[in-house]
Image (tube, rainbow, N blue to C red; front, side):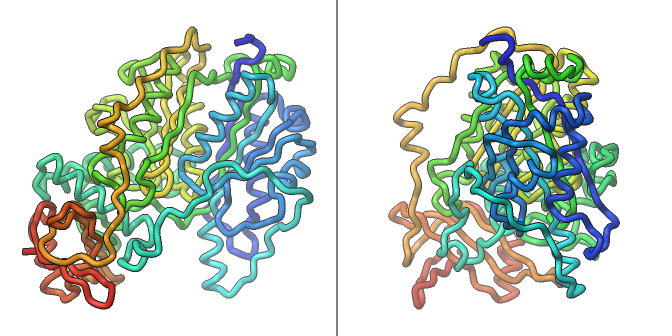
Length: 501
């Protein structure tokens, strides 16, 4: 690689707006401009860097639909960008885009690029409750290039059975992984709480965290008036916080451009490698194994391989953390202990630091930049996850240049590929069935309301079903381990029902 074309991250900025009323809150464009200018200021090059932008990328902002948001942002910044990019939905997408831009910088196609994202669900919801009409920026001439996979995360069948949103789906993987590890439910609760308590301790020291509060394992995992059960085994404090007003941006350059613009070398973070991968079984009900996530392992190991590093040589880690199982699965797939002394987050994680709605990993990149600059020579790994442990991305950074690239990891064997193939749920399931994953959804009063079951029929086909919804049946499911239970499947009017034995 030509030394002038080495990709470097030279600036990063975050914003956390806690106190603005809907009528006075900045709109997405203003918030994106704020962090873009903050990233340029962080680089030391300021407005000059913004005028030199040839690429402007925006991570999809929930409920903001201008014709061309990247053009609007570029105009605000005084830039005329050749590339205007708008991403698809996904928590992994900022890392995937940054990796792509790093490769384009290395190929000489891009010199100065900005990636920015925002989440303003708090303002949206407060405005709706107050009856305030938000006057958000619209327009933008031209059409941006769409980046990423535009595909829904759930099927109509899944939504029919209650798998509509992340809080409904991730508990399936949590319960399956707990059973695979042979943990009783109380041991698992304590272990899950200890893991996420360590995240809150990081969030408590993060000035951009939405909830900068350290909490104990019991505070996080035991139901309480302010911490109701959402879907077993997750209480409110174990769910990513969606209702935030936050934004983040990163500024990327070629080393040659950084020199020309006078960016001090101590600001540079060198890109060592990156990768992304998708589960072959895209939809959660089609996963052949709810306690494994091979594409997560593929993305992380490929990024590490390109960087020429083993996971043990990484100094700082930020695993995507929308729910505990996202972190646990990353540890499972990479062979790490959940109490790894390096820690598993630099932000405090999505339930506490916030930043959901697609842009969290811009916050983790910004926090990683600060931490790496404070430890010259250290190496950091950042990962992202989109939809339901479906899409994965990873990226490796350091303040010093990568000396050499490692060999790519071996391709999966034919047997491994066969194990990854999707299982399409049968529309009508009858007879004996074995439970592989489940959850119970709770109402706002904290009472069990709906049971969701996935497993295999006697013939080995995948079934998706609801359990009986009477209180006694739901409490019986919650009383002991349900994974592995054999029960009776029946189908009425095209709707499957599983009654545990």
